[in-house]
Length: 240
Image 1: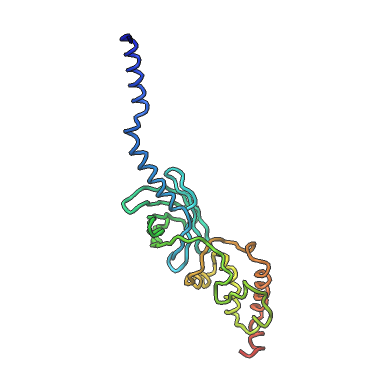
Image 2: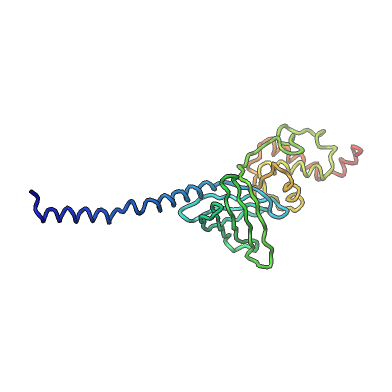
């Protein structure tokens, strides 16, 4: 027969366990947090779309707790951002702030649609004199495609002089820049920015792609550049 003292000890231990581990009270909250974390993690990836007349790539690189880290590539600039995310009625919303040490820095306010794999929202410049930019970005992984473009031969076979000697300077310039565009080069020159922004296959992902060119492409780019420099002479010579 147990003593009263033993019963009291057992009762006290049971109460202590209940208070120390209130599983039934905590479970719903933990489940909600885990669901939200999963939804947020689903947004990790790269997204491409228009930034005014230019094309932009936004990459959500990492989500740690409530912190989101990423970067953007547009018009020859690559800018990191960091911020936070929260659950909203539409899904997940992100705020990503660029460092602020560049005159073109600002803040991304984006919402992630898990069904369509899209980011939508806007970018607000730190300089309040500059307008906000509306964004509608689609999830997309960069993939090098040597067959893309008007002059795909520049990435698929060794060019001969006859392939370039009768082209105008504008045609040669586009042929050469397509090589870099296929590797995701983010153009600084405005006319190239605007041209490739209209091309579906183009996705800006890097500021320097020289080391990504194949030996064949590097050789072709050098040939095209040489003819580019003397295009007027060759153009007149071959009667176009």
